[in-house]
Image (tube, rainbow, N blue to C red; front, side, top):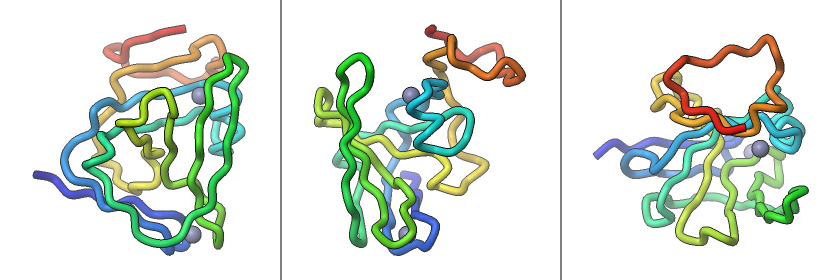
Length: 131
Ligand SMILES: [Zn+2]
Ligand SMILES: [Zn+2]
């Protein structure tokens, strides 16, 4: 089984992840743009049992326009979000793919909030779209 490691910028907060993600997706929503500081977010969902956390974290709860809650867990030292939880799916944990710093990470299979996509951004044709 593949073991992967995710970390914040200062590596105080780390994750040890066993096995492949349940799903990898891209989100173009404005909240993801704000959270990441990039123009889209890419996140991998895992079963909570695949993930072990090491180090200290703080939490920030964000409620989306649709009323969905996300609980972001970030490093109190450097501020990078290393994982987040979705209360409506407590069996899952989402990890921003960039936290793995691994260009060989499994590719996204799905793209959501296409209506907020920056027009210059092109995705591979086999990525499933969902506006
Ligand atoms: Zn840190
Ligand atoms: Zn989003």
